[in-house]
Image (cartoon, rainbow, N blue to C red; front, side, top):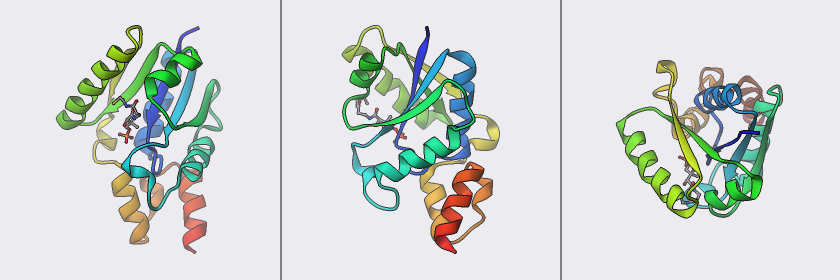
Length: 159
Ligand code: PNS
């Protein structure tokens, strides 16, 4: 069985993230969405448990896709779950440079772990969680950026 991990901060999950998860689900037998809880991005609008809930809501209709929190190294998570692949989306050259570096760090930690980079679809190139947080702050229409269940859920909190 080919198991892939889609890792990220997901603060919050965007339509761009969901597109990568869907495409990974079409390529692999099982996809584990790993909501990382370490790093700078933990503080603020979306605490880890909330980020996980929003991811779970977004992938509920996708068979063979599950989500969980992980506080440690991504390579350790993949090893523990028997995953041989990391799947990441790439929007631009800066993303590629960062992903290239992370791919080799992860491969040095776990030599059999392969990183698969998927080009973001053009309509999602300007999407980011940072941009989504900005739209939330200014009360903009979230359905253009976030999975519908997430936009609805966050919209309720703002009402
Ligand atoms: O959504 P993001 O913030 O771009 O995702 C980055 C993330 C969380 C995937 C990356 O920072 C990561 O893998 N963190 C886990 C810690 C780790 O394994 N570090 C070594 C590889 S860079």
